[in-house]
Length: 172
Length: 207
Image (cartoon, rainbow over all chains, first blue to last red; front, side):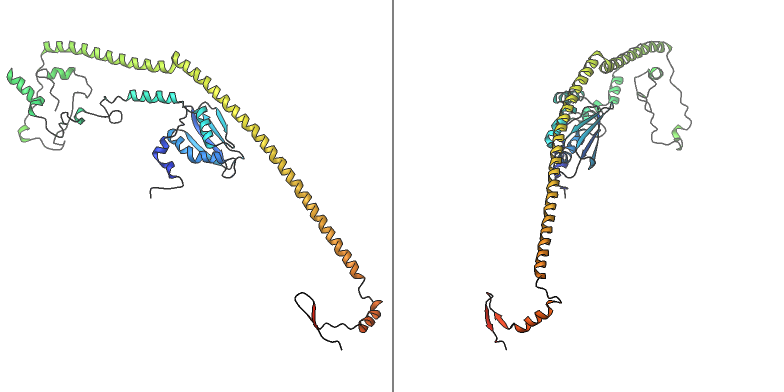
């Protein structure tokens, strides 16, 4: 059965890639304190249910922890790498508001993301030949219409080095 | 065993060529180290080909120049990369950027702080209202309890009065004789039938 759980759309790649929150490099840990019952925690619960998978997909190196029923009111806490802690109160807020607010204070802006994407594209020039990890092709023999790899099919005699040297030597 | 570089200058080239494994491929071939030598090669003594001194001098000079130029180019490119990296990390532009980022971060943190304060105020109000409501409810509950208790007391009093009323009709030692006389004088007939409305329908005759 491919569908598991209550809202299996949360597990699809398409949904995860639609996530908008990409944290700044300084954010290292994110902590969510919320309650399982109660009207005021509803927004936080929805946020954890729907938005946290997207956030973790986009920020694979940020540690995200969830704490349930520890405090009377729900909140988010972010720990930056210089020791600063950012507290966000989410009591009574809607999950959309929460995600917008978080994106505003600690997310990378659209222009920064676009600049990063541009830089990445510039680094990876499709015309480069090299290891598979960095480039599309390793050798010209992989391109359609070019001379095939001599390891699979033998080159015609006129193209081999030893024939050419023999001809050159015999002519002298 | 080695790749062919040129016609006659193999030996000299081998001496001057870089020591790295770019040019040389030491492949074992078909036989392992324990296999015996082939019959045709039993008495073979490998003699290296003779070196031409004039040629050696010329090649040494040329190779030296070539390697010097290549090394210089490599080092120059490396230095360019390092300089670029350094500029990016600790250049004047980087400082500007860092300052701007810090400024923006401060603004956003202030905004967040404002939001938190606003939520705090709302929460305080809400908690106060809830407390007041709870107090009201408590008072109401107390009042209700008191009312119930008063009603119980009233009922009890009514019962006592009723009992007092009934006490007048009790048979005591003084009334005993009188009541017996009365009972004997007035015989009561319980043999009667009633219909659904409660009216007496039949009645036997007392004897």
